[in-house]
Length: 370
Image (cartoon, rainbow, N blue to C red):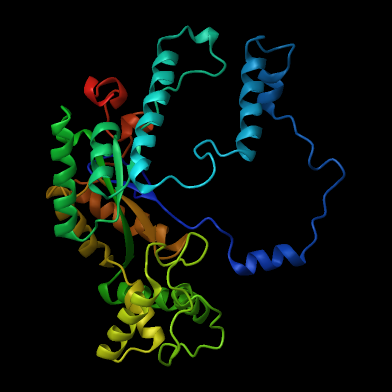
């Protein structure tokens, strides 16, 4: 069995990782000057261009299509398509989202029924894009039940995951859709190794590496609202309380709705009760649910999730990249395949087909939801 085989099955996996370059890479970029030949930035003609892109070989219709896409990319690089400046009040966000999706859906429907030769760009092979929703409020779940075909969530602990998925299924049925019409993808941290002990050791090493002294101070600074560069992270929290009475959109990375004074009081109480230093407190606050263990033990857990209808797939966050993802592919995937919850090949050629989704929900949703 090839562990690197493309897979589609009851369990689907999507990789999440931080695309930002690390500090060392950024420092090297600053120190090493860019040395390019005078024409290095000029567009280069590929073999595809030579075969298809020359006006002498291409059909006339292809040129305006390409120019349309090129102009659109340039414009989108300067103007956000999804925001008009400022922030929408929370109470208006899903109203705006409903209007937005309805209008875009009408455009997609028109494209699907139009003569392809009249379009500036071809219709997608999957008909219409797959709609994913991320939102955990009751209103967000209802929006997903009406409009989404997939939903992202942080609900990964077993009982919570089972309850969340059951709720999404129920809401989908209330809008006249099959319960399994929406695939549920919780985010999951996975650390696997040859043995449980080795996996635990790797997980602890990663936590210590991720929560370095600078990061720990940043977490506390976000609530205290001032520079804490001199804070001893192996000592207690600062004696003087936060500077701010409330957080705004421009300061704080903990939660913009938090009351800093209240949050600081909660942290002091927790640290006093458990004898935590700043380092231990932040480590406790940042700890999230993880699948940690040998490939066999983690596969048993995930198979139980799938068979209990707790999830349809995972947004995988490997403990390290690329090694952590390699461990998942090399060690975990074969174990999942043996348990029958991860197939060995894709059955289709599009995302929609490989997620097992039928025609776009926009064509099947109840008229009342439109």
